[in-house]
Image (tube, rainbow, N blue to C red; front, side, top):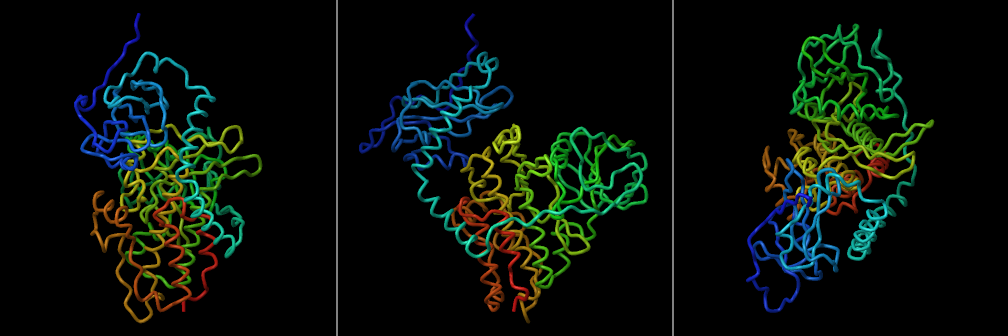
Length: 506
């Protein structure tokens, strides 16, 4: 029996179209989409036609939605200059992502997908995958290698020269917050730990509400704590965040203290038990409080150190914590404790970069790029992700996006530092880009302002009178939110810089 084949047609037949007289190269179907912006430089675009500048290959990149291939990128291939197949036969590269490269005009408008083969075949061999990756990497290095190397090593050299190496040693929080059947450790212990008995859990008042869960102040066995409640319909979000909390060695003062999870017995809702941060989120705290310079430095230190720890691939006592990208860093997802330190929370959009057999070989969670592009808080989203000009399955992309958001958070924090304004009144709290784009900027607003115009939040004029502090702050912020992802600091470098800020801002 012949395999079942599905033919997907995109666009119209264009055999009669001709390229401009000065161009003799390949013609490909082009998809007008922000996600397709990184393909534009591969050739001139006229409507839905792209005239390739330096390749004979058309490409198509699709997400599988309800068994159908939905185009995400169509155009001239960015890297390959030679391809053999004149037709677009796509193959399954991941669970829900397919692509093809072909060598005839508009071949990416007529896509043949062998469903029977793609569903039954085993994943491609390591050698096949390695060959494809090698070709792609060589192309990237050839085009961008020298440019990015100069930027990257300039940034690294500046950090090594000024601050030296070495991460701050992580320490564990020994506080015992609960008694009875719940352990006193700020850890999810090991995978496979049974759920907690929450029969005596008392919910007192709601303190925050989000898309997938609400946070309550509660009590259990006499101890006050925060209770994050997931309705039954959002069990997937509960499971995803619990995976992050369940990683080994996830104890750090810069992360919210996790004490366990289980099902609330009366309502059938899944819950996390977390430390209760007195001042709530950083957004709430800054909305009603200004801070002095030492307090701002302390908060900036714990915030950047927490992110650096999250990004760290850590081995200790035969345990391994893989690197984790937060994915939704914002002032709503940072808590402020009674001692003035900050802690990262809400890992519902996080990505764990798993190692293999203890070796530092990354394997990201199997999620679609389409889903990843829909998570996170829009105003804190990096310019490359706003434009859709990156491979969201790349671990460095997500890590670098976190550092961009860190820069915005540090600006938000110092914008409420009373010592930086001297005799001037401290402005009311504003979110990043709120002054320029209003309280609810759209995606188009942010793409124009952040990506195309490359604007960033304004550094207040009064800061400039404090020469030493202003220079240090300016360098940290600009090197965190740099437009080029490869030129940004690592979270650890940012933490190192914050740690050596002057003791006094004047």
